[in-house]
Length: 103
Image 1: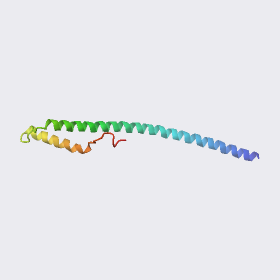
Image 2 (image 1 turned 30 degrees about the vertical axis):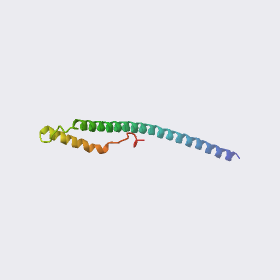
Image 3 (image 1 turned 180 degrees about the vertical axis):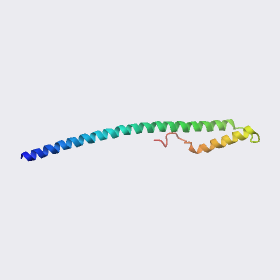
Image 4 (image 1 turned 45 degrees about the horizontal axis):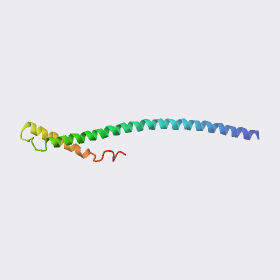
């Protein structure tokens, strides 16, 4: 009977030790996940502000040249046309509903 009690006691001590180690590992993983979640949220906010900035620049370019005042036969006009064409290539990255794809 004494041997049985000693074996049970050793198993209990081993179980407590194992559970304590598992608890420390889970707490470590939770801390790591909080850090990565915060970083992901910061990056998402940066990307949203970048997309909104691109949309604003595209809108301003369209307003500036809505009457077609910049002709492409002079240097300023050709530079504006190249700039506009470059900015219009960014339009494919524009998201209509900000946050729709993020959530």
